[in-house]
Image 1 (spheres, rainbow, N blue to C red):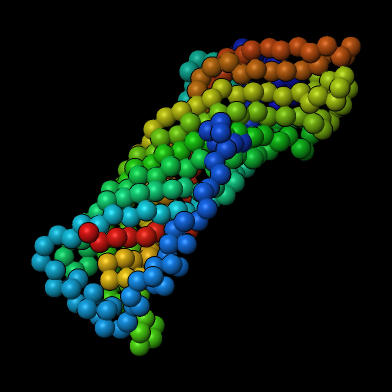
Image 2: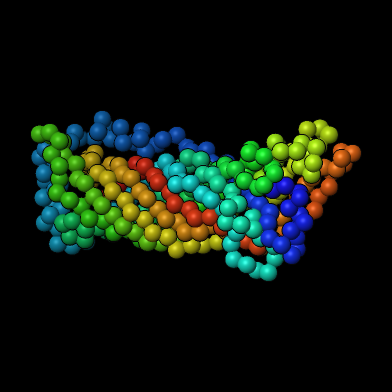
Length: 310
């Protein structure tokens, strides 16, 4: 957003935003213990045979009661893309002021760690309560304020935690060979997503007029606009599908895909911080109250989960 947008305050609408990073401390995924465990189980335990799998499948089909289980998993997650626009009008100025002005980008690939407890309901159904935490995806975007140049990078950090109640339907086994079978499954779930958005900054390194209101500082510092943080809790839903691979008699490796609609994330109504540089090189900082800004968050994930029958 160029400083010349300031003349739209407080009576006119227009300004802009930015995002990138998640939750202060960047998350570094631990070594892939699940993969190590999955690879080591067949080596340390009894080999899976056709009779093991068929007996397990038969036991499942003949189960009259409830069979509990627990899971631990890891997933690689990427967003569908995000576009920050003006949110609800709280009586202040709008950051963008037009449907043609926005901050568009995406969250980096991140990792989630999740645990769950569930129960098998007869031969083909099971249900589980799952909790997961994501601390990797950073937002990288670009705003399109007028006269601010084509390159207007934005960044922010996002922390997410999610809780879902998920129902699964397991299809009949697929026989891959005489000694190996897999069980396809589909699932649907509903729950809540809790988020915290922070460190949202929009920078202007290449304005159309490098000697105008968006001029760089005496040391080459870029002018920028910092957006208020945001946090909240949304109702969410998800769809998933994949296959279960027997590892040992009561251990399954689940490999799957998941789509999640996590609802709308928002920056709070409050002051943006506008930093610009005067012609003589001095720095000026202005605070202007604005309405909230919003973006829809949908994610795609590839999951690997170990499931232990109790």
